[in-house]
Image (cartoon, rainbow, N blue to C red; front, side, top):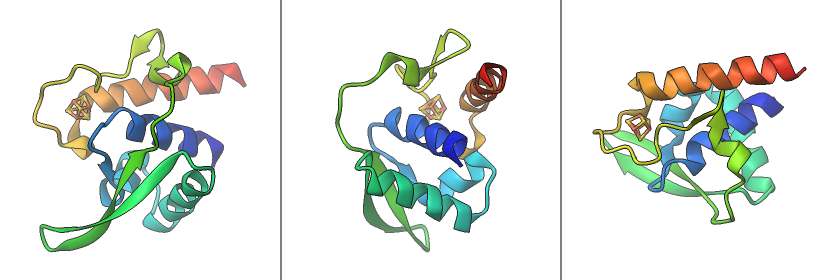
Length: 114
Ligand code: SF4
C-alpha cells in the first residue's frame, strides 16, 4: 500500500485544484475500497485534505494536498518532472497518457530500487 499511497500523494500534490477521489482509484488501478484506505492514510498523516464534492450526478470528494514545501524527489520519476507542472491541457486525469507514462516510470523506478 505504501507504493500506492506515494503515487496518490504525488498525483494529488501535482494538481493545485485537487483530484476527485472517484478518479484517483481508477488512476491507481485499485478498487474504491482500497483507495479509501489509501486516502485515509494520507488524511491521517496530514498530507492531504478532503472536501465534499457533488457534481455530474455523483457525490465524491476533492482531495487536495496540504501546503508544504515540495520535496523534489516526489515530483520526479525517471529524471522527468511530473507532467502536470506547467500543463495547460484540458485535464481529464483518468485518461491522460502523459500522467500514465510518468506513473509507469515511477513504478519502474520503485521496482528497481527494491
Ligand atoms: S492533463 Fe494530464 S498532465 Fe495535464 S494536469 Fe491533467 S493529468 Fe496532469
